[in-house]
Length: 76
Image (tube, rainbow, N blue to C red; front, side, top):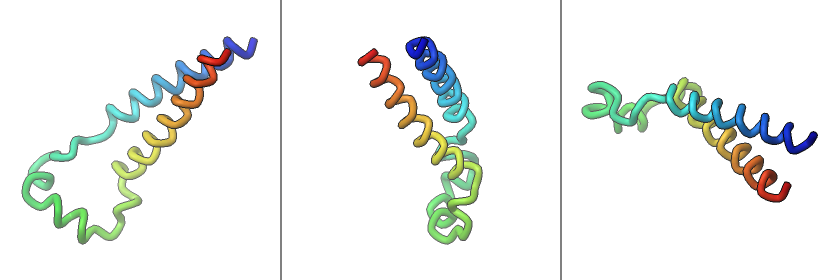
């Protein structure tokens, strides 16, 4: 029972991680990334509140959860 639950959770986390990574924009998105990208990141006031920053934090959280469920599946 717990094995199936961990596998289902693992698959859901994997799909969510793929979706979150695909939703993120590239580092050189448009002209702002190639011309003024450094200035925007240095002088930007709400760096932590942009959608890309939120998606970056979510990627980290889901990656850690994915790693934990992978380790749990190895030991089950």
